[in-house]
Image (cartoon, rainbow, N blue to C red; front, side):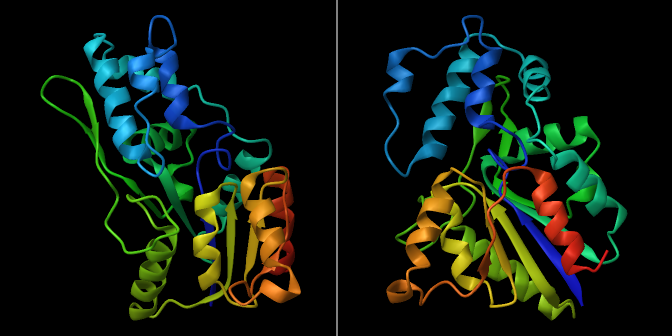
Amino acid sequence: MKTLMVFDFDHTVVDDNSDTWVIRCLPGQTLPDSVKNSYRKGHWTEFMGRVMNYIGEQKVSPDRVRSVMETIPFTAGMTDLLTFISEHKSTIDCIVISDSNTMFIDWILHASGFHAAVDQVFTNPAKFNELGYMEVQCCHSHNCDQCPVNLCKRKVLELYLSEQSDRGVEYEQIFYAGDGGNDLCPTSCLRGNDVVMPRKGYTLEKLLAKLEDPDDNASLRAKVIAWSSGTDILQELKASMQF
């Protein structure tokens, strides 16, 4: 029986939003209003496609984009947590479910040396086209009306757990660490023994506080423990594994 650590990425593993961090690669580090104002609620991935197209039109090279992304800071204590996970791969599986994209996350994890800590990343596929512009696609399609059109994290987590079970891998405990509104949906498939860890002061913590109301707790069985740094998560992980 193993432990599963599930991370969101932006404002969880890294202490910023990777999708907005990329704008630093532009000469003026800002987007024109025509691009900025094109965002529609729930359609962030489409918006990021326009952002990356604009960056390409400004002749920003893929290498320049990558070098800027590699400077994004990790959240305090997160490197210690990832080091611990990478040292205990026989007992801890670790996945990332993020609304960022494959290239950003891959670059950041490789540059920091933490790629080995993470078994799988579930996010929006990205690649550079023949013009050298990054294209971002939707992660999948789903029928969940709570989540952005491109990604339902509950669907991803349920499918992962099902596939692991088919391989004979069962989890004694699941830890889910996140910060945003799109991290609420997957908490509904966690069990009573599992732990959902919202970042203090962020949207997920506020949404979970509403669910913890005795009159409205049908969808939340997991224990809730808020965190401020990766060190807080590491302490809970060690305690559960009796380190």
